Image (tube, rainbow, N blue to C red; front, side, top):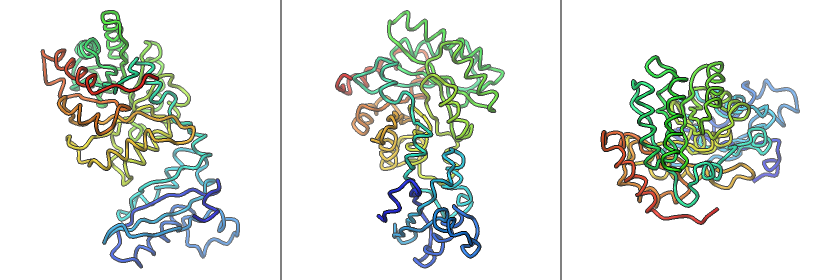
Length: 377
């Protein structure tokens, strides 16, 4: 790798380019380097410093298959302004409008990682807060939409009392008339506390925060007033700069990041969900596991998990949360696939049990317990 790529003046971004032949790929990569840096033809860049330090460079171009190439670009760290929105803009702003280009990965510079700070709690913090030190964590969702706070609280109590570690709102729950945010949070947190008194174990309720920035700040205040233990946020829905500001400046509890709307752009999930959500402060990252109701394959799921919890300097590891149509009878398979640093999220497969929900929940918890243990931390 050239020496200039090891400094904090530039960072690497990789793109997949659909092209019929190498000459077309070379032309597209050169255009991409300008589009994602100075956004003018090189002939219009007269300033020597801008040419040297700001103009994007194509560092490598390799075949991926007969119709795709991987272009490795170096971009200016200074152009990011060490800001979430501007970093995304420099990585995939105008380029996202080109249907032949996909953002594959980026090596986020140390200066940006220091500014973003990553998860506040991470895997160890979630284990400490739930007391689940020697096994995978369990998670379930409050569904369907349309239920009143009382009914949601009853579900919350049943799930917590029968062993679930984290009970999250369905991401579709907001501040609707049938389940107003404040009433829902108060009712569900009371249910969590009642279950704790009955069982002696800790579970966390994670309400879904969604809306405009002012509404999100109000919801954050409600969360803290009621002593809620975690929250659910969808960074792509509320805006990634808003997500980062909430995590770093306002929230005092662990954050589960939901992937809603994250599939609306051509960015590889391992980078967006695993790396970038983690860099912005997600303590746990939800994504669809293969074989469920979404089309992610095993390789993509493994890459997301690696990006979420792999070694990354001083950035704490985030907990991968495979979900999306998971069944209790797949627990052993899931643990074998991910190991023990994982949170298993099962929603509909528990809720379809109806009156047998407590028994089905216990079966889920028991299956996780039987999957093995990890060394005490």
